[in-house]
Image 1 (cartoon, rainbow, N blue to C red):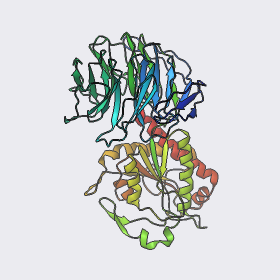
Image 2 (cartoon, one colour):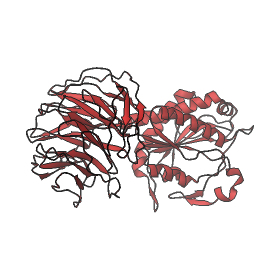
Image 3 (cartoon, rainbow, N blue to C red):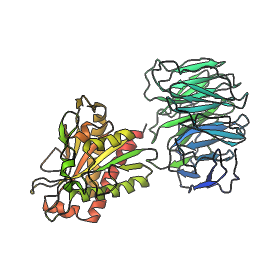
Image 4 (spheres, rainbow, N blue to C red):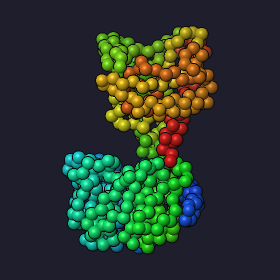
Length: 527
C-alpha cells in the first residue's frame, strides 16, 4: 500500500514508507549557500542565489522535471529537495537499511521513485510501485535506475551491469561480462525501447533501440565518469566527477571541468528540449549550463557521507589484564603485544584517560560537521582492543581516515608532539602501500593543524619537524585506510604534563586533531 502526504511546509521533508503511511519529518533549516557562477566554453547560466535547504547527508542524484523546468535532488538518507518542481514525498525520515543511490521521475513527472543500494524502491506521487530487489541478496549493489516512459515501469542496474526490470521490458545487461570498471548509472531512450549503461571508465553499453554513439572507454580520464543523461536527438552526455562533459550525438553546452570543486559531481540531468543540463555535486551545488535554469541548491554539511575512525590509545582496564594485553599478535611484518598500559604523568594522570577524553571531544567536533565518527573503544574502563583489531575496525568500515591518539612517555627533558606515519610494509597478512601517500599527506595536515590549535611545538627528541616515519607499528602496518598516530605531548615532561591535565588544552588538542582531519578530507574530496 502506498501513501502520500500533503506538504505542510517548504522547510520540512516527510518520509513515507512502502508499507505504512506514518509520517516522520526531518526539519531542514535554510542556510545561506551561494552557488558560484560557472563559466564554460559554451556559456553557463548558474545564478548566485541562496539555498532553501540544508542536509547532513550528501546528495547522490538529481532529476529534471520536464513539466515545470525545475528539478529534484535526493540525498543518501532519502531526503528529497525540490526546486521549481513539486514535492511529492521522501524517505528522509525513515531508518534505511541501505543508502539511497538514485532517483527517476514518472513519464508525466507527477511522481518519482527512489532506489537504495540494496535494491529497495520507494514510490511517491503517481509513481507506481512495481517491485524491488530489497528482499533479495545481491551480488553487487544497485547504483541507479531509469524510467520506461512507454510502460510506466522501471529498471534498476547494479555495479556489475546486472539489470532488473519491473513493469518494463528486459533489453539486456552487462551482468555476464567481465567489466574493466564498475557500472555507475543508466539512462533510457526517449521511447522506452532501450537503455544505456555507463561505467566509471567511460565505457558505454547500449541495449534495445539505444544507439551506441561512442564512449570514453579507451581514453585515460582525469576523473572517473559518474553518470549520464540522454538528449531528445538520441545522443547522450557522460559526466565526470570533476564535472567534465563528454558529448556523443548531443550538443556540448559547457562543463565545470576547469573548476576546483569542493565535492565531486555525482549526477547530471538534461532539460526537456536537450538544449542544456544541470550538474549536481555531492555538496548540493547545482551548475546550470545551456538553457538549464538554475533554481537553487542544497547546503550539505562539509563532511557529510565521510567516515572517520578515532582510536584512543590503550584502555583503563589494561593494567589489570596482563594476560590479555601481553599476548603476542601479528602486526603485519612484526610481532608485538596486543596492547600496553600506556604512560602517565608524575602525579598519576594516565595516558588512557587523556586519549579517551581528547577522542570524545574530537568526535563531537567532527560530527558537528556531518562526519560519521567511530571510536575503537566506547569506554575507558575496558581492556584493549588489540592493536590489530583497532586497525581492523577502520578497515572494515572502509573509513575515509583513521587517527590514533596517544601521548608519549619520553625523556623528562624532551617536549613537543609528533605524528607517526606509515612507510610501505608488505607481509603475508598485509600490504599498506596504497595508503602510504595519503597517510603522508594526512600527517602534514594534522601536524600543521595541531600546532596551530595548541601552540605545542614539534618534538625536540624524536622525528623531524613533527613527523616520524615508522614501520614497527602494527596499527599502521595493517591499515588499509589512510592512518597516522599522534603523540600529542610528552607526559614525562613537566610542562607537557601540566598541559595534558588542562581541560582547555585537551579541547585545543581535540580541535587540532579534528581540524587536521577536516583539512585532509576536504582536500581529498576536492576535484
